[in-house]
Image (tube, rainbow, N blue to C red):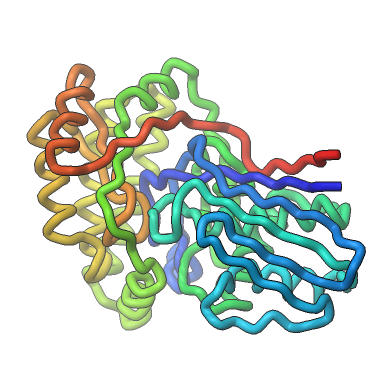
Length: 339
């Protein structure tokens, strides 16, 4: 038997950062995001012998352990090891197995790829062990593994986006999370897909480093950080209203304001290169846009005026920026068997 588990990556439109502690416990956070047809995929094969094999297709890396051996965290595929250690302890897994992992985007891309892998691995174990876990429980388990088992700094939106899929307005109140799916008209989704240009600006970001700085600023009561996060939350609420009422130009302008607010969260979110690319896109007809993720690099997206998509695409390509074809997807975590 072979089990496959797949989850989508996500674009974060607004509110990112308000899902990070201690802000969400103290003031409540909201995030507006959507998943796209880029995926993290995990294949799990039970083995007859007492070994654990982990293989990353993307990193061309392979590890092998005894089934009763603790998988030490040493910087090599630690995210996968964290899930394995957690699941074996929680569910007394004594069988051998092989895990193969592939991701359509690398860590640091800004598309929530690391958390997507974590959710996909949890999903593979859920299927194999026949665990009665809801998408909420899968997402929360992945969050606990990343933040507490491994000590990786970050928020909560990526795990929930991957587990649920689709356009979601997600509320974070302390440790309670509520996912509100947005039932958008097909016309709106198709037009949004056409006018939103996804682009890889190069490099990657160290989200843990950026978020550690943001967390420090929040905890110390930095007024500019708190005001910017409060404003990001307001803008996410306004973005939801704009999409539900078919006001796409308003949505694009809100993205521009959200990016200006995000840059004030903490240092390292933008760079001179990112600023230059953003201004070039706006000069070519973008209403707004932002980095998708903590910042510093990876993927950005730009919202075009109705007739400016191709001018913006050319301007970005002239800057050496790679644009990426994509579509939105409503499917979250899904697993199946191959026999």
